[in-house]
Length: 90
Image 1 (cartoon, helix red, strand yellow):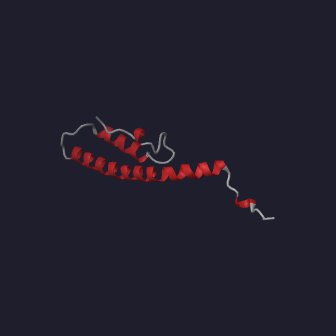
Image 2 (cartoon, one colour; image 1 turned 30 degrees about the vertical axis):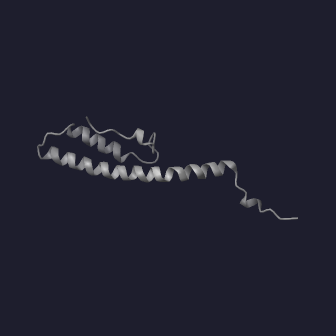
Image 3 (cartoon, one colour; image 1 turned 60 degrees about the horizontal axis):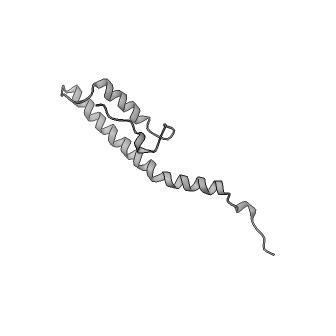
């Protein structure tokens, strides 16, 4: 007769949760990189506005977008699905 260590028993729900977490890791990393790139892009746009250059969007639109980009993290609706990212001013 063999002894079974029931404390090591993994439930199907736990396995599913672990698999989902593993699936999300690269998506989250990709979205974090996108956020950093967008924050840099917004900074360039705001600097251009300060310098009097004509760009698409107003200063207010770019500042609002920057706020949305900063909020694009775990807990945001749709995160980390890139199709739900905030969109640049047009």
